[in-house]
Length: 151
Image (cartoon, rainbow, N blue to C red):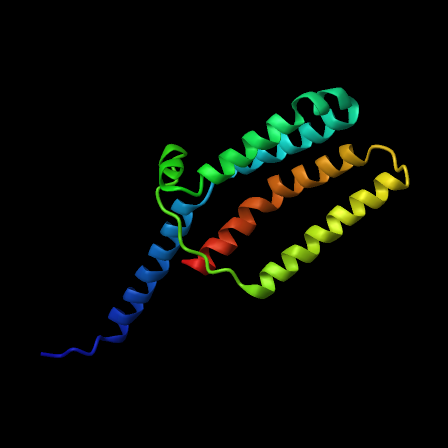
């Protein structure tokens, strides 16, 4: 009995592993339309916050809490099943990635605070539009990249 696979069998096995890795990454991710809807909602929230500040004062906290609850629920088994995300790979946090994320977040918050202090007009409008377009355009690509690396 020969236990050494032939080159064709080894190539087929590697192709199957690659295909299954892509399938599990696709099953764990959000669909492309969810990224677009999220981007549109963030952009709309930025426009509303700029054009109608009283709306943000009245409903801003409620909207933020609802979005946070949806994000938290999507990371649980129950919430994942409810939102039709059957699997989710465990992604080990990388310290360098966390440091870069913290630096970028600090720069965004600092830039927004500086622009607000300098009286730059329509900061919330442009910030919401930028983040919304970024989510809609780059979200699916980034998600696929992270999930394939984790799978």
